[in-house]
Image (cartoon, rainbow, N blue to C red; front, side):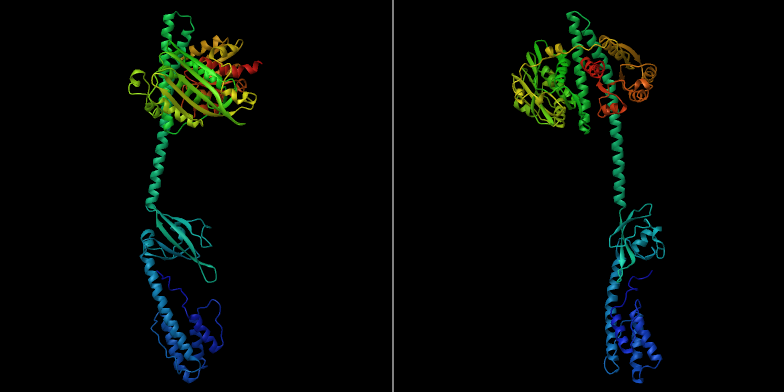
Length: 614
């Protein structure tokens, strides 16, 4: 192993060579060692007898001293008087050279000792990328036979990665069990040329193992999240599918002209089914919110129709002796862009709670314009009831998870205690606020706001904002429903793709009541075959089915001649975040979640089919 101090130019050598040049008239050639050159000049001058006899002995003493210095013997002291011919100055220069070299040798030895005692590996590499020096730490980690070996046998480096400037470059050692990270910097000579490289390594084995452990933990968490998502999707499907049949058949029974007693029984079935559906929604939604998976859609919807649809849905849960009514600001825009499903979810929760805690009186649902600008509109929703009310302390913690109005509420009225916690998070995602006011025995008032993107032109372009404060001629469920023309699908043929027989019967009956002809398919494969044979005016497509699911069936239908433009409505029991987007990506035009509601289906078909007939 060579010592990095061996190749250093001795300080004072240039001064010595200058004195020799003054004596003998020869200059130091560029790149030559000044000490060796000085010795060569003196030796040649003595051999050619260019020195007087009295100068031979001082010159020989000088030569002996120089050879001793070249052998690293710095204990040199020449007499500096009486030599003649200026040799006294030469002797003085040799003494100074020996002193400087002795001091330098001590510093170099200390430096070498320091480098060799470092726990970090240190390598000195030539410009040819061969190891010239390796300290003991490098030998312990990379092997003892390092000097003379190409550096690429030990370090992973690209051919052009070696730096030409004083900028460290990071390289990785080629070891199986130990991970070393080297920083490499150039050694620059006095002539501003790269004379080699120094590499200092750091043992990063623990860091690498930590990163690997974190990667494994991340992969495991992602796998668990995927498994959780699949589990929730399956649970949603398995729970909503029978609920769709229960609520759908109850709706058909309610329209069958039963006597009062049987109508009451059907109403109880619908109310119980809606309560169970609300519980399922709460558990699934809270799970998604806890996992940070709440996503918002941006699609056009009618705020007034949404409020009225919620009131219609909850009519079955209205207690006898309680009036349920919607009051709508006439300045409401006909279309806004936002997540109608989430707004509906909040309204159903608040209105459902109001009906649950109100035994007499009324529940009113208000919707008005709070403020707007050229691009956005903020709507305000209020749910006011004449129910049991709450104390101020209960109101303060009402939106916390697993919390209800009082300790007896869960026993008397039921509920998971998740609904209002979900409401708060959804409203915050909608860029709004939510709050409550209540007085025991006098009812409660819940208010929330949500911000939406305005459609290109709506009622706000002509109506003044003051109408939001005092709505003139409020719209209610009855007069709005009467103003709308009923949907007539006479002469239309719809393809219903559904594997559950009960849901088949329910959807088929609803569509036939609208005047349409119906073709049934039990899975996606049958649907593709049906569309290959003939055109349809619309397709109602279940998503989870045997043989072929609805998403794949839609993708294949879009490649058929009769399937390129036919409207496809997703009927899905999968309410997990992201499923809606997957339906649209597959080529579907609309999305309805189960349990299916008659008003929502009619509205979807009206939007998809009526423009084609006009």
